[in-house]
Length: 247
Image (cartoon, rainbow, N blue to C red; front, side, top):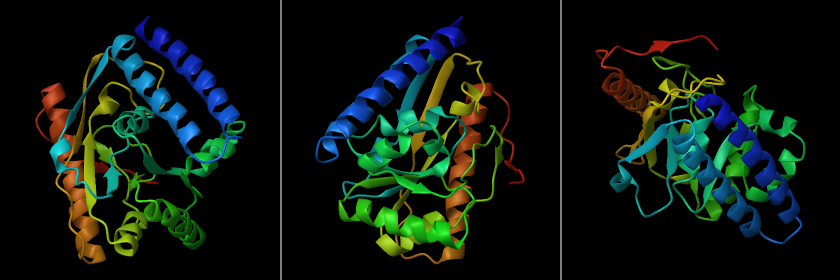
């Protein structure tokens, strides 16, 4: 019953707020659409708690600097984006072009200032990432990226892609790693939801100035180690090293 109620709210909220955002794209500036999306994500977090029984606990806010940063987050669930976006008044996010398959979504994403890149990766995708994220950087907004580029089941990870490194170097910003165990309760694209306390944890920023090899190793180690710790806390199963899965 919880899963059914949440699924009903998910589609109701998604359709309602998407239509509202689409209507407001005719107005100048980003603010009207941003206002709608802020409320949409916060309603979804409300529905997670009150309908699906998934309470969100946010840790490590003290690690978020006052200046704009890049958030590099673990991606286990469609709910990850709602949880992180709901914590900020304005946030640029990197997303694959798969979202544009939904009617009028490209119009909303463009107006919102999202950074849409080709899911297939490659040189063209890196160029698009650099070009489209430059505007967010110029505006002084935080940027959210999922360095794996894939949803991962709890206990696994995909190869970390270098797009986050290029942003880190080009914009000379600290990167805040973000761990989560939300996939235990809302796993990937599954219909069933499990009640419990999902943790979203912001960790100490990785300072600027590291080379690519050191940065990527540190980022992956930090995110995966803390994610596994959160999983162990929630399940009572001893810490296990993450397992890489093929792309």
